[in-house]
Image (cartoon, one colour):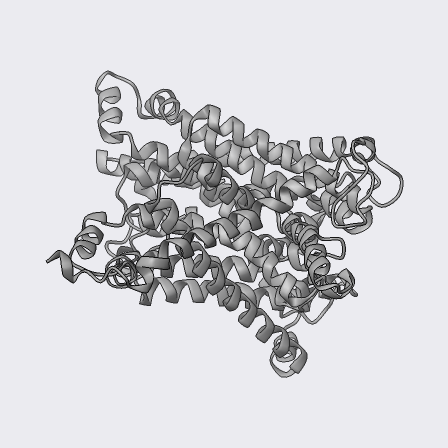
Length: 306
Length: 277
């Protein structure tokens, strides 16, 4: 489903009528309104109980002075996040790593989506299954996949070791930052591809053919005809894949090679159950991603579809 | 003028080859470890570049019956427990997802696009929601109820989208009006005409949200405290504590599950849903 961003952010429109009319409708119009409210109500109840209430509680805990009950008001946990260089390093790690993996996975997903849309590939349904399979794998399995390929006994490690004569132990990159990069890509390329394939399906092929027959090279055709058409989809994919990158936790819990925000949240809990600090970090994460998504949807031509 | 076409440009000569190389590399990168894991789960040892000592079921046996070290429980109990939790999540998802998908597809109302955004974009990822659940529902965490309601919120977008794709191919207003003019009440129309017509989307959405809930790790890891571990925690214990080949067998169990689900989706015939999985 696409979301029309302009109408989301547009003028507020007419305010809904009073609650009384919804419960005891007088006219057909009011009855329809009651139906809409009734249809949305189950979802809203779920959203409130399993989303808004816990997140609000988390927000309150992050200001709590006491450790085991929520009371008092202190901003010390946020102060710590801002003043302590330890947390600044983590924030920096999270952002550059998320950005780098997002750009790389989209840069790989664009040619793949292009091939799927334009070329006659043998066994296309098998290819599609392989490309979408990792979407249903949790991050811990993605990490395991990288260990299988690049760990100490990993296949690629051993192939390179065989050719270069070095010890596999020195060549294994699974638990280095490079290995983590590949593990992120393992979950993010299929996600980016899923989003971009929807975008590619809507590209006007007539214009591309016209450009080619008028003398444009394939690259010029892509640059000046295809790219402008897929740009909203690209930005939308960037927003969603970046969100995914920031939320990755299982992968890094196994590989442990870079201290990022989500891993530190877990460490606050695991080492001494510092729930207030963890809540402050989770709140910062939530607010950052929420505002980032909002700004991206409002000020770019991003088309968010899933 | 045909002669003016620059046939020798770099992209005309190498563009297609370049794109094919990227495609093949991506395919190998994504599929090779899956195949290797599955094969090595039947091997006795993996010391050199390739696993050796075929064909043994020792690793599978350890996973299925459970050893007392490392991954201490058998996969059966974790699988059943996760299946149950995910099923609970799916039932909630059907109850909340189908109505809201219908409201968005059928009616035009104030704030519809916002409702749509909230319905199809996950509110918070597993780890953030897990932290939020820790102190809000401390008593529910041990019983698995917290996992069920957490899963249902985390996976509800998939249900809403699958059902919406079913609704898109239907003329909802006409169907609703025909049914109403034949004397059915609105509620009866919704339950006996609209919902059965969206059957395909509901089944596909259920399968997808069930699989993703059974596979959910980040949320489970934070919220789970004791008792039978959910499937993803079982996998984690195997990957971190068990021998490499035992872990390979445990991960293979999960691959088989996903393969079964993919086949199930193919039988249902919802192509869009398969791609999304």
